[in-house]
Length: 257
Image (cartoon, rainbow, N blue to C red; front, side, top):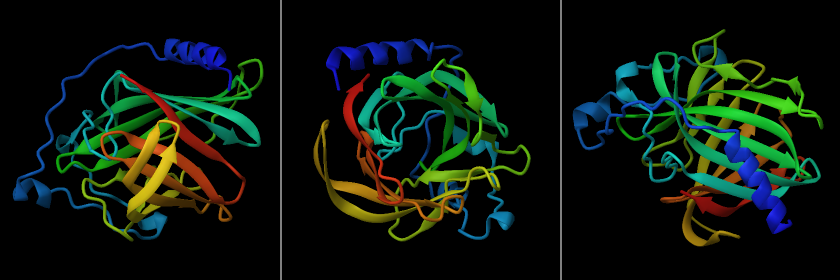
């Protein structure tokens, strides 16, 4: 991908994510057994009976999980292919927060370009519980046509609205073989993940890593699709690759803070 063109797209995407309201964040406590007892993660089961217990006082918008850190201002740039086209994905941790289901969440802005055209813009909402587990509380997403007009908002959901529920996207201490719902909005958002390797090797343009965390992801909405993701301590997600289904790949190229 042309370097100047990528830089221009990066600048354009950053302009789409202006900073706004800050919120005070409590430091998560991870050493107290009393607190840990309050952070029971939801068991995996049928989505129709999935009702995770949420105590709003146990969450913070300050996400410091070592496998999924979201320091304000960090921008991560990925390149690869999606839908058969060259892809550029720019993810920025905004200073903004959003109240979802009574929980103050961190807003993360995601801009996806295909063949140098902005085709999808998404605001994701994350929060961390007092034990260091990261939860996903929803998203506002829009697919765009070549003229920048919104053609679909499919996949958007807010936990607590119309039966939608939050999900776990990263444990503080990832367990092999344990499955979690990352989200639940019946018929719209049903992603599931499982940790399958805690000592994986992965090489991306950003660097080569040992002892990466590897997960697999599935969704009942696309039963023929299986994806895998790699996470590195202190960095976060460094690669997303399709294992089954449409051929797609995104790899981390650069991180700005």
